[in-house]
Amino acid sequence: MLSDEKITHTSHILFNSLINKGLIKLKVEEQEVRREIKRSFIQALKIGESIDEVVRRKLQSFSKKVVEGSPEWNILYKKFFEEEEKKRFGR
Image (tube, rainbow, N blue to C red; front, side):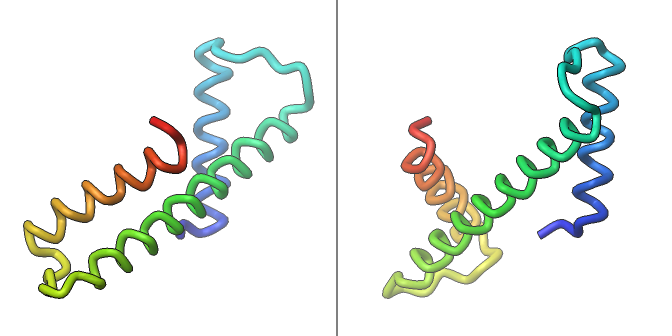
C-alpha cells in the first residue's frame, strides 16, 4: 500500500495535469475533486490488494509448489491476476 503522503502527492499531480491540459472544467471546489481522486486511488489499491491475496492463495494451493519469483510463478501470477480482474470487472 502506498503511504497517504504519496497518494496525496500523486492525486495533486494528476489533478494539476488535468487542469493544465484543459481536460476538465470544475463545477465543484478544487478540494472536492482532489478528495475524489484520492478516494479513487485508495479504492483501486484496495481492490488490487484483494486480488493479490486471492491469486497468492490460489498459487499456494497447488500440490506442486511454485517458487515465488520464479518465471513460472510470475507467469501464473499474471494470468490469475488478469482472470480475477475479469471476474470482478467483466473486462
